[in-house]
Image 1: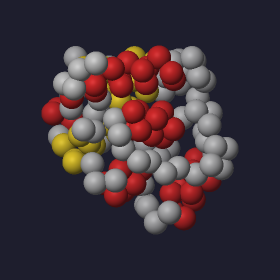
Image 2 (image 1 turned 90 degrees about the vertical axis):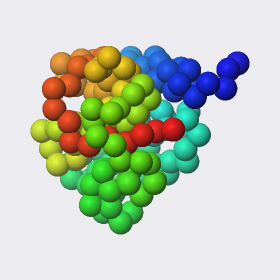
Image 3 (image 1 turned 135 degrees about the vertical axis):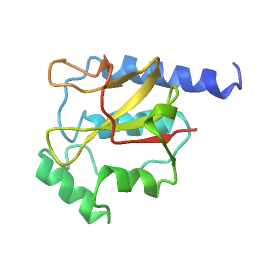
Image 4 (image 1 turned 45 degrees about the horizontal axis):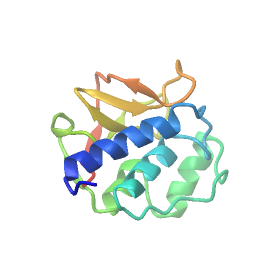
Length: 141
């Protein structure tokens, strides 16, 4: 096994795609937050989430964030002390936030070459996507 951080990041991103691609989107059990948390744990970060099923709607998800002292998913990632980067700087394994139809936003994991793994309404599980708009990004070393 190699200690190369880029190989480790690539393997973590591939494992995230493999794990979540067959899991349909369900708020609170299989969503972008849980997928991103699993990815960050693979990279050695400690991530605390509400219990599985603790939220099932956008409103209850926002309330769960608020109860933990965050106004947004971006605030929660910032609190983890992940380095904010420009989305154009993202490399494999980094976390990005995309616009969404609701106030939560959508978290995705960079796969490289402009592609990410994340949930989309036209896909059954997490899918490989090529976003055209970004809100924020974090380096996930």
